[in-house]
Length: 184
Image 1 (cartoon, helix red, strand yellow):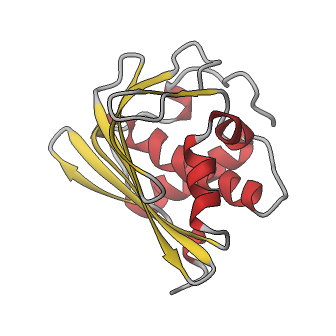
Image 2 (cartoon, rainbow, N blue to C red):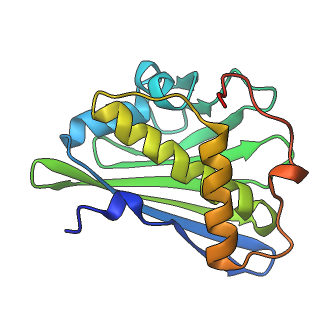
């Protein structure tokens, strides 16, 4: 497996006014450690912010609960430590479905993340957002946690806009001002 997969851009497929995103990452940590970072509220707080998780099918899965518009969802698939799927609603965003699939990769873990049914207009915000969060997850798992960085997010947004030639999407200048807890 390519050990530089963490640096790759996420991809997307457009379906009219909707889009589906995909990220693949490899983390040099055991699958149980990565699973805990994705599902344990104390671990999620280390790299994504406050969260609420009811660890069962149909349970609440809420992220960034300290924000004015947190992500609110319900668990649609719960198969520790390999599959987590949940509904995704944030503010006035469309409803979408996020899914993590984890597999052992030697002493590490391969993570495939997909989010289906995202409004295409939000793809210019979502792709760099997830990319940055997965960088933060990797730093946290490596024992070198970093805080959310708006300059880094802006840099990533520029990369995605340039790489994919995104037109008619929301960008930083068209979205809400910086969120609590951001640095930069």
